[in-house]
Image (tube, rainbow, N blue to C red; front, side):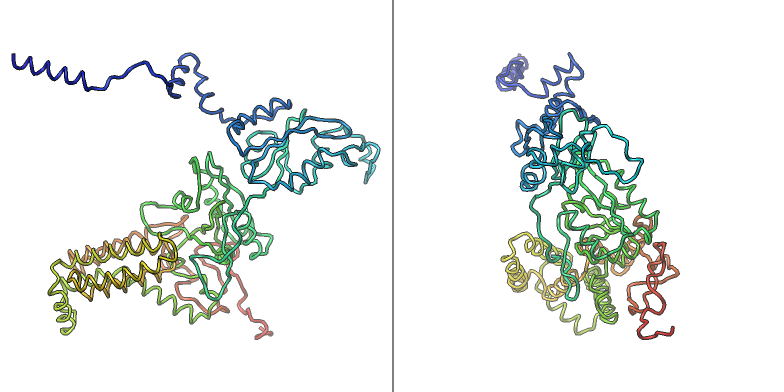
Length: 571
């Protein structure tokens, strides 16, 4: 009886509080409408979602083209889609026509002066009869040609320097989305894609992250044509090939593949274009996204493709036989393939005397070693190998840690995390406050932590040296990798001492040896050692006769054995 009362109470409680779905609503949901309509008409769902993505030919009827473009660009909703209808005059005949463009991406003065004025206003270009003004260069051209309105507009009425005729709507929409305007004329089953770009863009400025003292002060911008022109100006050779490839099913982002036709290996060029053409994504916004999509192995944090914002660096790699990829909307270009030596080099190395460049490279290698191993070695020595420390220094370390209540691994991880927080905060806050955060975090908090006996003073020195060394690594992604790998060396040193560090280092080397960048070994020219051995250290400028041998370029030599003819005229 008690069970029956208990069940009835629970049932009443559930009936009162439980949510009940109902079939009567005061509103309608789009998905429900589509699903119901699909039962009656299976083709209705596709039309409600979006127009079918097929290659449609342009109609010859003016009204059909106008209605189609209005639907494609949702002109009733979009406020920046401009459709300008007018009457075109050609050979004293009038044809209905319309222009379609996106406001803010075009130059209105160009449209008014070089598109609408020649097509609308009466002048000699659009009222004279070409049959009365024949001009032939040979006897075979005396045959009269049938009047073609499309060719007449293209050759006589359109003074704009870049005009293309297209027969499919997809070609026209691609041009309009990039800042062109489309011209449709009645009776023509084609349209005109007219270059009238005029959107605002950032001017050429100094590179922000690859600063040099003696070198070019120009950096890439977000406009792809500005970037290709910077490379064209530096390379200054007709063998420079720049091919456009669109990536993204929705965004259709333009990517420029640049290479030297007479230098670059054809297999490398084909591999780069193959990877770009076989990326099936909806959109691509930046070169950082593209780098992750085309690199050989995404399981490792080591950089495999060179990213640069300097046109002189990109041009130098182009002339060495590599391939440069420029993404529209990104101020960074991608250079393939990339090796470990490339990420330790700086654009300024070629501008300095080879002795100075080699000294700086040695300093960078030392900084790379310090940022990887110093915290792990400190933990390993203090925990397992105290006999390696001089007695006086060992007494000082023990005395400094005598009042610290935490184990050394907790102390080290706390300071590493604090340093990463200070670094990230300095990047994200406004620039006037950034240096203040570094001063407050580095001096005040560090000193307060020592006075409060939370960390030892020598550990503050270890973390500071490690952080400064990480800033000396030229490549941003390689610096990130060192910061991540450093924690693996810290834990291995804490658990097994030097043996643990040696094990992690062995695994690290195995990973680097296994990595390929577009089919090339990551540790070139060391693994394997090539015939033309060119490693980290630079030779004098007059000895740099050969390009990198592992690239298998079409022109192995880039200068004669005797390059200074002014000094040795008879050799």
